[in-house]
Image (cartoon, rainbow, N blue to C red; front, side, top):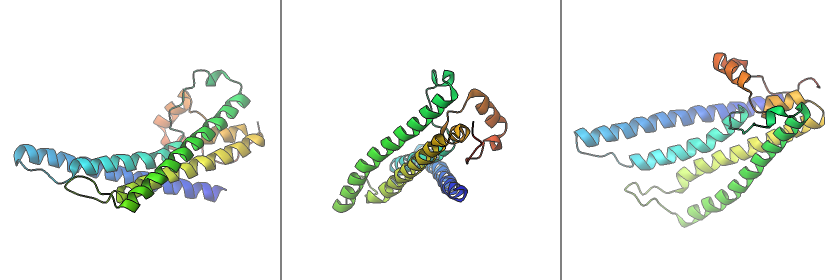
Amino acid sequence: MQSLDRGIEWVCEKAALVCGAMLIASAIYVSADLIARKILNLSFVGANEISGYVLAISTAWAFSYALLKRSHIRIDVFYRYLPRPWRAAVDVVAVAALAGFAAIFVWFANRYFFQVWGRGTRSITSLALPLWIPMLAWYAGWIAFLIVSVYLTMVSAWAYCRGELAAVEARVGSISEEEEVELEIDPDARPAPGPRSRT
């Protein structure tokens, strides 16, 4: 189980790093395009289009990494006042709902991707890029998000059934203000996922 945890986290971290590098490169390219327009009165090909693809791809892949790091926004006005077993139950339901959303999105993205691929659709720009190329990277990011969310749902539900509430919180629980402060001070203070003692 721990090796699977490490493998999933490794893939998501590497994907996040690649997407971060893509965003930086895209920002540099767009900035260079703007400067060239002002100074040299010329424009680079596809700056806006490429930046749009990069943003969509990076967003899709970031979902998985954010889910592993418990960084998705949670509305916890009432959550923090619930007893610990109820909070853990809400955490399991929340990640299961997220997995359901990801499944629905992947279902429609799958149909759209193969429709674009089958028709050989190209962008209506000077690049005339086959749209299945950026869509494949975007689609893969959503599949990764589905896999991670289903995996965390199964693991957290199993931990809840075993009474390992601390393990549920460590995997899918909402981060408290105290934890956020600790993580800002020491990013390595985040608890490692895995079985915890029964509470």
